[in-house]
Image (cartoon, rainbow, N blue to C red; front, side, top):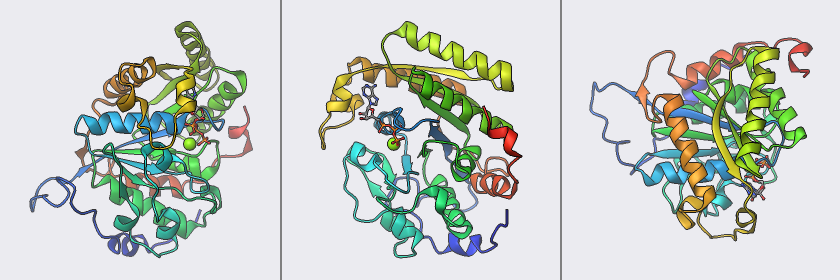
Length: 313
Ligand SMILES: Nc1ncnc2c1ncn2[C@@H]1O[C@H](COP(=O)(O)OP(=O)(O)OP(=O)(O)O)[C@@H](O)[C@H]1O
Ligand SMILES: [Mg+2]
């Protein structure tokens, strides 16, 4: 894949976010640090990625972590609804050169910053290479200005989605226990692994009927993944089916704030705790070649995807 060379110019044109503690205060000569980049993905659509992302982001922000959520659903983003804002500008404006990154990013009521996805515009999969590079530059800039960059990835195994996930420090796959979602979760894990992705992969079983169903479903997915592709999966826990999640009205806060003692909120806390352990800490790390997300994404952008066989289950 051809890589355009004007990335530095693009990154230079993006002003830093202002007014966020720590962003403007870096002392000259201080070691530059980089956010932990956490991708939340699924094979099948509608498994609960945005639900997990919004609750996790609010929970971390409540503990003083500077979290930026990126709604990577460039076609029909919805993270803004769950985070309680109605932004005027989206990634679409940034991609069209009509707004800078700091004009598009918005603060949300419960703490996280948000780079809102598009609405009714071209999906990530249909962006050209220059636009993809512009997105990667934006993500790298955001990663330099927060503690945790949380990517709400599009469902599926489109090359551009895989590219975003391959550059993450950790990927969380959200699935439901039903067979179609599990099969597609396996396909996603397999694609990432066959492309050479070796970051830790965690699994959240969402909308389970019981703890047993969650544990059994995870065990099945982990066994298939281990046996057929050799990819280890880590259990991040399960979230029960809760009609209250679907009935939540616009403007109501995420469960971790609105009903902090609910089963769903406790499940998200458990996921946060396991993520802390698996990641070695959801916080910034010193910027080195290997921890520079922009370099990682450019590396994966330059890699040719393997042949057809890698994507068939
Ligand atoms: N634990 C849960 N209990 C009940 N309903 C849930 C639960 N988690 C998510 N849902 C519901 O499932 C639907 C899909 O959730 P969500 O939008 O978070 O999925 P998604 O994976 O982000 O979808 P997409 O692939 O379209 O981006 C929503 O209506 C949401 O309210
Ligand atoms: Mg979503």
